[in-house]
Image (cartoon, rainbow, N blue to C red; front, side, top):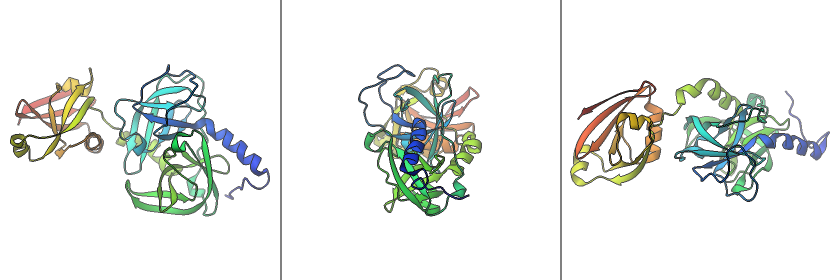
Length: 320
C-alpha cells in the first residue's frame, strides 16, 4: 500500500482537515481528580493539566491508553472529550509489558462516540509521514508531525515489545494518544521517548491485545486503600520482610469487605510475594490472579493467610 503525503495533492489544508476528523476521538485522561461537573454533560472554562491522552477505540465508550497513564490511579479515572464532556471511567484491562490499558466510560450517551478508524500498522514504511495527537503539558489537542524512522522491537521499562519509531515530538501529556498516518488512521499508541525519538505501540499489537488478551490481563481489585509502613522489629523477624501495607480503608461490598479484611490489617504478601506499595499490590494481583489469590496479613500480632476466589464469592481464612 502506497503511503499518502498530505503536503502533496490536497496540500496542507487537506492535512488540517484530516486532523480535524481525528481530534474528536482523542481524549484527555485524568487520574483520581475531583469531579467538578456532572458526568456526561458539557463543561467549559479552564481545566487542570491531564495525566495523559487516550483514543476512543469503539463508539460505545472503550478508550485505549497506556498502562503507565493509569497505573497509579486509585479509585477512579476521569476522561474528558474535546467537547468538554467528562466521564468517569474504569480500567477494564491493563498490560504493563505492552504498556497498554483499556478504559470503559460510564454513562455513555446513546449516540455513537467518534472513534477514529484504526489502520494496519504492518503496512507502515520507513519515511512515511505520521502525526502524534495528544495533550502535551496539558495543552489539549496539540499535533506534531514526523516521519517513521524505524520499525521493530525494543527492550524498555515495559519489557520487550514491538514499536513504531518516529521523530514526531512527544512531551508529558502525549502518552496514550494516537499516532495517525496521512489517511487519518490510528497506526500506533504513543508511549515514550527513547534516544530523542518517539516510540508508539503498533495499532495491530494494540488491536490483537484488545480482541484476544483483555480477559487474561483483566485486573482484579481488592477494594482497599493502603499505606506503606515499616514493620516493627518483632513482626519483621516473623514475616521476613521490612515493609508492608497497612489497610486504611475498605470499600463496602468489595472483595476485601467480603473477605473480612479490616482497617488496620497489615498486608504482607500477595501470592507469596511481599508487597510494599500500591503499585506492587496491583501488579501482583494482575499477574497472579487466576481466580484464586492467597494473601498473608497480620492482625493483632497474629499472622493469617486469606484465600480469595475472585468472582466466585468464596473466601477462606485460616491461622498461619
